[in-house]
Length: 103
Image (cartoon, rainbow, N blue to C red; front, side):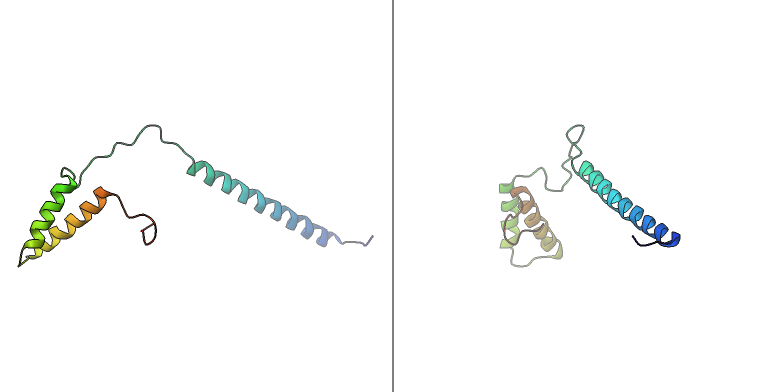
């Protein structure tokens, strides 16, 4: 067996302690992340429908959109409303799924 001086021995012990601590910290961090991700709501969230078009049906929105599209001259307000209606229809109809869907 070779003789190890005191300084080398202390360095080896220190390195081993650091490795063990790093592993334990990583394990604990993963454990905490998992707990946080799996946390349950105490009760159902109450969602208020606050959108400008939340009280309208998809049919009503499409009718309004078609009326704007039928105009020969559109004002800036018409263009803005057209974009809002398209967004509201998409939101009420469900978001695109599968290929090219936003994540």
